Image 1 (cartoon, one colour):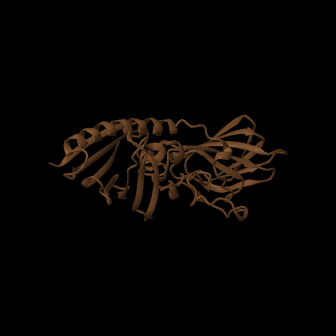
Image 2 (cartoon, rainbow, N blue to C red):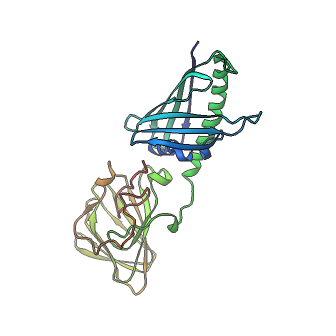
Image 3 (cartoon, helix red, strand yellow):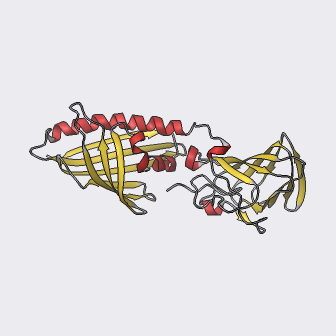
Length: 300
């Protein structure tokens, strides 16, 4: 007899966000209630070999084993198997993800296995256990993934991007908040400081000046925006931001919809105002860092 289980759950979050959260192996001890620790033994861009250790069971026994995972994010499929099988003759697992809507994902786990003749439980009983536990873990994952989309993010929580001028920070993005229609952030500009000219081929931008005074050059035409005023910047309109007041400007921006690929979201039309400060975050290497108009780069 071969054991077979097939469980799924719908999560109110974009498929890329669900994928990244559930395939971040380092977070599994928090994501799953059954795992005490995980040790990554080997990892490539599309696979990982790791040791999972469970919390002690009712008899105080601690179970641990080595597994390997191979993933194809384009196909939204993960294949896994136990390398150290323990009481199993074999254990093969397939995770699939289906985007039902922009903010609605179905996650499915299929497991095929067989217990060894001397295992403490037979295949039928293990099938019941896995079905019961999968439902528990899936509900836990759903709650944590959906709650992560509601986290409050502070300016200090995200890295600064100074590449194009100013102190720019992306606050809510696909990678950290599961946004599906755009992203938002803020930029601080000292008097005379500017964000170099650029445009967004796929996105509109909405600016709100929370403090200070700003000159926005729209296709070369200057527009003054003062504190507590807002400005809409259409697609393909070149724009440059300059702080023209005597105090620092704090500007909030929202950009949407997202470009098809992160590198397509922002087109520079002039040199950067100055080289990035030594040690400043590079948007290509940060999980939630972007230029003033590019879609954030996903963590994986």
